[in-house]
Image 1 (cartoon, rainbow, N blue to C red):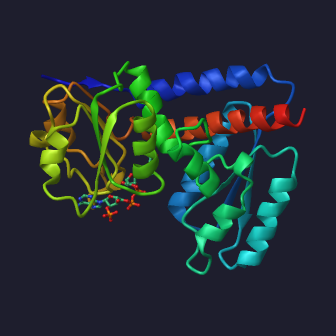
Image 2: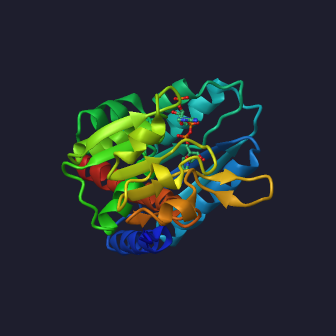
Length: 283
Ligand code: NDP
């Protein structure tokens, strides 16, 4: 068997075009504010890509750059200013923050109605309750990919590798809300390969290059690779050994070009969703 490739670049392009069309029909431009603290090169690239995609979709995007030396108090004051700004519908603080600033109080200071990353405890809780919510962008992107591939979710066995607050846990919550039978595996899971072999849908988000091997895959399963790992030779690989797994799976996402492009598209989608909710709620 050779797996069908789930083309995240193509699905994301369609989603971005749909958002641009929706935005063009609005009487206002949804506003996204991205806060970048310090000079982390990877973060700078992510923020640039987010800014470009937001502009491309007709959003009013601004990037606020603060020095690594900024105090937590000044960063909090900036968040309060953005919370109060009626033109700002979505606020995203790019992680990681410098070591001197604890991320939790910063993320908790963001107005939950503008929390387009879905990291505020109120949104985390609402997601666990299965409510419609601003959900984290990467797992939302995975759900969009599964929908685009017409994957059946109801009643199937889904295994999520990884239990981070950003990917693994919200991923499991979204799959559960879609009626899958969900297992979360992590670094303390006994016989992780055996857990994976039971999966009709396997989502890998561990940050370990090519950890998932071909003989971990149930024939015909859908394999979603969230991992982004840079090898010493410069190659970018996922958490899944792609060629081995593609030989067994029914459908698979590549890295790059799978989940990655969906994350940004879903950030734009969340921003428009937040804008519509907030501005409609405010009349
Ligand atoms: P974290 O490091 O926060 O979490 C990794 C998770 O994997 C933890 O729950 C950890 O378990 C588990 N894990 C680590 N090693 C093993 C192992 N050997 N066996 C089983 N479980 C293991 O990572 P993130 O969730 O933030 O990211 C995961 C990957 O996804 C990374 O490669 C990251 O770059 C990528 N990513 C991609 C995005 C995209 O847009 N495509 C967005 C965000 C992340 P434990 O809890 O027990 O320590």
